[in-house]
Each structure stands twice: as structure tokens, then as C-alpha cells.
Length: 342
Ligand code: TXA
Ligand code: MG
Image 1 (cartoon, helix red, strand yellow):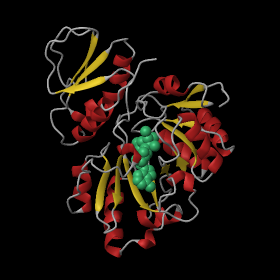
Image 2 (cartoon, rainbow, N blue to C red):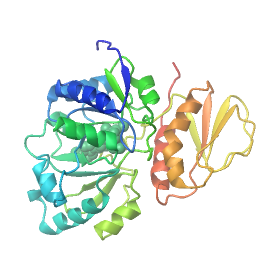
Image 3 (cartoon, rainbow, N blue to C red):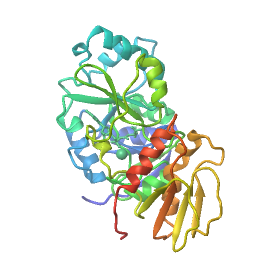
């Protein structure tokens, strides 16, 4: 691809207008969301979608999430979703529609993506030809302001090269995509830190967890009304479930609790540094709060990755309640890759 000059622009009204103008022209821009930074383009424009895949070096079989603006007035959330013309909710039974209404009224805008039957006009490139489409209404004010300015849904995968760590700051986006995107809107550090939770309906319209993320599955169950099975991990239903994903360049190993280490090792402690002789060390969440751990996870992995060590040893998050499920999921995926450092 041709190299472009990448501008990092603060998310001021002028910055937003510049980003919107690029998007209206069919170009792509990086934008902050509350989860991670996204690489955004018009979800209904095949050329813009191709530009996203190309900039990320992402295979076309990995479908994208369409991001939608918040409604300007108080409306029923399912009526609004119909109005966005991305999905065919009439294919669902009334009981499922009611549940979806409860779920989305409670949790949108926010870090929740739903996979629902797609509308005809949705490009195959967005969904990788699947009969379903992934939709999310982000809560970040900058993402929302941009969506309102452009008036079309934005496809936005995480703004990293395929298989790498998702960026949670504008600087991290720049290190991933400099020369590949004309503009990065800087909205500060992402507050959630891990990607959205993705849920989808199976053929019996039971809700399934496709990717743990920013909304705890317990919260989703409380609004859905019945237990939601955790993915078993033995069958890939969403490409984000590929074992090797979200990986630092440095090989990573997960342990319950780090003992003494030797060699050029970087340690990611869960809640407290125990001075075990590591070359570099970071503590995921000194407070012990899984929300703090999620918020810092990718940034700390990136820092350790940049210290020139030979291995990262990460402590497993002690429980899989709340955001703990997403944290351990991302650590497992980071550990599943054998990479060679450039
Ligand atoms: O928090 C997030 O979700 C971020 C921010 C930028 O919004 N975006 C994000 O996008 O994580 P991405 O492209 O990295 O992950 C999208 C994942 C795909 O890898 C796939 O697993 C799932 O969404 N997906 C998309 N469409 C799907 C579909 N029709 N059926 C099943 N899974 C789908
Ligand atoms: Mg991603």
C-alpha cells in the first residue's frame, strides 16, 4: 500500500470535522472508543472496508463490527436499530426481540456488540459473507460525535495490525499504523481497555458468548434473564476466537504465581510486585480491581514488549468473575502465539 503521512489530532471540534471529511471521502481514520481505539471507515462502502483490511493486514474472512450513533431522541432501541437498516430483526421471534430490547436498553451505549441477522444492503465484506452482522453503539463521546457528523455507520476493528495487541492510546495506534492511516483522533487513554463483549444468537435463538469483553457476562445474563453459556473454546465461531490474537512480539507465558526468575524476563504481576529478580516488571492492578486490570492490560504488555526482554511471564488473573474472564482470555490468546522478534 502507498505510505501516507499520519497526523495525530486532538478530538476538538476541528479535529472531528477533519476526520469526518476524510470519512465522507471514503478514507479511513483511527478513533477512540471506550474499549480500544478503532480503525474506522464507512461500513456501507466496499472501498473503505477494503482500505481497513489492507491497513490492518487483516484477512477478509474476519468480519468487522458496525458502530452506530446514539439516537437523537428517546426512542425504542429496537425501532432505532431497525431504522439503522443494518439488521433484519423481523427474522427473530417476538420473545427474542423482547429480550434483546431489555438487553440493549440497559447496556447501550457501551462495550457490548450483538450479532444479529443482517439486512440485505450490508456489504459482504463487512460480514465476511455471513448471514449475520455485528453491531455496537459505543459510549465514547468522540466516537459518538464522529458518528453523528458522518451520518453513516462506521466499521471499526481495533486499530492494530492483525494479530497484535489492541491499542488503548493514540501513541499506540501510531506505533501500529503510522504511514497506513491519514489521521488518528486523540481522545486520551481508553477507560475500559479490553474490546467489547460479543454475544450472538444460535439457531434456537439462545444467546451465546462469542468473545468476553468490557461488559461482564454476569451483567448480560441479568438483563437477558437466562444463563448464557460461555464459549467452550473448542469451536471457532468468531475469528476473534482464533487462539493466536492480541499478541505482543515477545513470547508470553502464563503462570499462577511468579517465583524467582532469571534471564532477560519481564514480569506482569496480577496485583503486587514481589521483586523476583526480573529485568522489568509491571503490576496489572495494585487495587486488586479487575476493571483497573483490564484498563491497563494492553498498555502494560506493550511497555514490557518494548523493553527488549526475551520472555514475558504473566500471572493469571486470580478469578474469572466480572472483567477477569476477558483478562484471562486475552492473556491466553497472547500466550498461544509463538512469534519471532524482528
Ligand atoms: O471493542 C471493540 O469491539 C473494538 C472497538 C474498536 O469497537 N472493535 C473490535 O473489532 O474489537 P475487531 O474487528 O477487532 O473484532 C471484531 C470481531 C471479529 O473478529 C469477530 O470475532 C466478531 O467481531 N464478528 C464480527 N462480525 C461477526 C459475525 N457476523 N458473526 C460472528 N462474529 C462476528
Ligand atoms: Mg481486534
